[in-house]
Length: 120
Image (cartoon, rainbow, N blue to C red; front, side):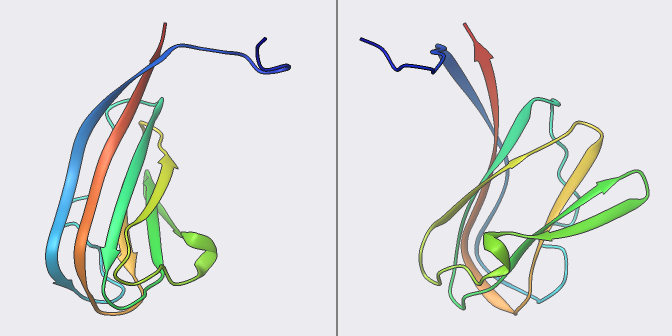
């Protein structure tokens, strides 16, 4: 018996490390990375894993051309401090990305990987 109404695909994931911050103090409302992050393909996802020690609102800044929009993650609610929080963001190849926090904090770990899929 299978799952009724669901399609089954065999998916292989390829993961590319994009950037990382480890045990570093960061300032509120400034870009966390010196250079914006670029996805390598249009059909990819940035997987974020972040732990910090204050309880901050994390936002992603997406830039296309000369326009930048800022979007809060976690519904605009502070992420759990001293806990590993995970988010997936669908990317587009004509955009660049950066991240901000609303409060000065120490980032214990912020790992960004790009997930690429191949469906067999």
